[in-house]
Image: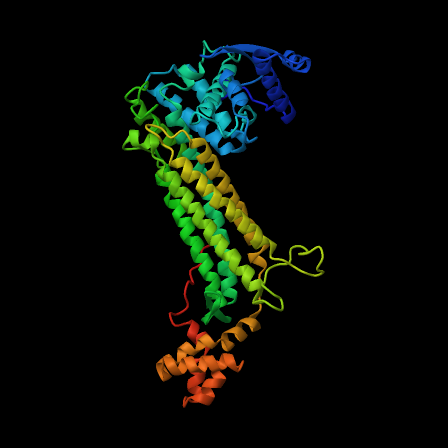
Length: 516
């Protein structure tokens, strides 16, 4: 096949934009009185005539897409972001089309020569070619039919070109009859969407692991440096900075394990179930053959959904993934917010650590430095919470036999995964790796907190310990000093009972696990 494949040189951005504008102009001239500039634009490009069930349009001759794509670019004009903004979705769709062509050929349903050309065209798209040929707005009605048609047209026209035929010569290779054979949007779009999401799980899990290691490294440098734990923003009992930062790493470990556990769920597909899950227009053998080919091509644990009717409308795995992303955001926000509090000051806050100084913090207060990286992380998390709301609403709209809102779900999830990936990399590189700890401040807070009196309960009882704590606060002194004056406990006993490091190690040193 390699000997028959012609190399493809993508058009420049300018050419693509011009072609898109001309396509818009062509549509306008056939539906409304044209201005002279619109008519001129339509006449400057060689076109080919294509038809669909509604009528005919002139399509730019150099476009790999066809009339269905042309209509969709005019119909959907809201977000300003095309499907190509998420290349992993476009590539995944080509991967699905390739497996289907192979399955159809294997079953004798598609001519071997056509199948080879379709497979070659799909491989080019999977490799990143023809990316500028997917111009449709992400927020498209029809459950993703427009992207499916777009993919069918691009693959068909590139396959025609590879076979020595002109674009649009669908008598030889047809977008619907050949590229879309045995398929519908309602089984191929979800399959492509899930493959695209799987492709983003590995880098996102890696970002979790990398940030977790950064917190582990920070924790290990301060495993014996004591501070005070706080509950309800009030003094609690001693702990180490190491324990505090190891906890952040533990959060992230649970996150990446959850992400990785979702791959088998995302790999369960209704491919071959076609329109509503009944397999209409597909050979009875096709579903198994297509699933097998897709599993072989991707190396993923692809399986057929046990109930294809249910799978056509069930959005559970999207909701689960969205929840996992939201949970990462909650954990990141927790870490970012804690660092902001611990960094507060330098004179009138906790002042227990310093995040790296990244930029001037005020246009009026000289020398003020703000924790801008944690604040940026927080804003990313807010976006994820909005993403989860969007996915939840869209997933709940599966009326009767189809959920028509896959496009907003998958694009929202892909946006969220990219944002979290970038946020964690930034958080690690620009903040966590450069944190310095004010060890003296932490020790002072641990030793002076009245809550440390809890360690006296077993020796003198809760009531007397409470009186000592209250007096320490009232007299602005330490529990150790008051206890030395108000109890019969020896200095050695008090030193042992009130040792903040010993108090922080009641369960041993927690979370010493390291992930490299």
